[in-house]
Image (cartoon, rainbow, N blue to C red; front, side):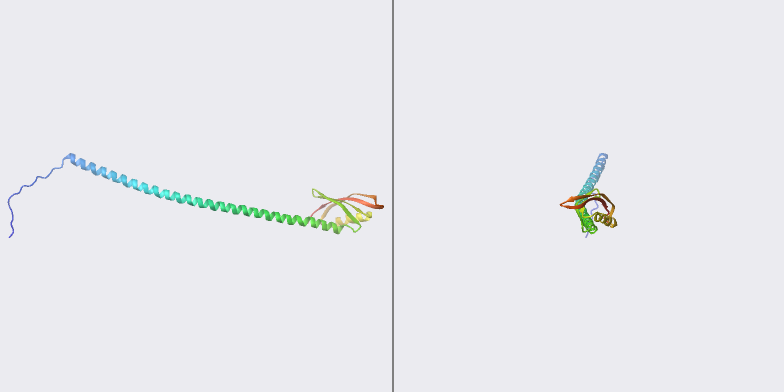
Length: 182
């Protein structure tokens, strides 16, 4: 059987919350919320700073890598320029090498067998030759052969004179021309 007590019991009276206690609770909740917000903001700023520092380190590494690549490219460009310059010099030397050979070959074809060259100089594109021949006709033939060549221009006989040398009468000549060097 169940027993039920119908007599009134003593109850503790309900505590009344005073106005000061309410304000204190609200202040604690507000201060806790502000501190929680500040903590959240601090943590988010620290994570942003860490992220930016990581991005900065990555960017610096990329800049350093690209600087190395730029130096390599510059070195390659410098080497390429040096090689190109050397090739140009070699080509110029080949061209210059053919010029004197061609010049001497054409002169040797133009000079008669009875004439000789004693001196040949080049001054600012003008070639001066002094030499000797047995006859005046040999000198004239040499000048005509030079004029007939496609490699020479402005051929002038500057001087010719007859002199006695070792008991023989020979002709000393001076002539001037320009080498076109086709």
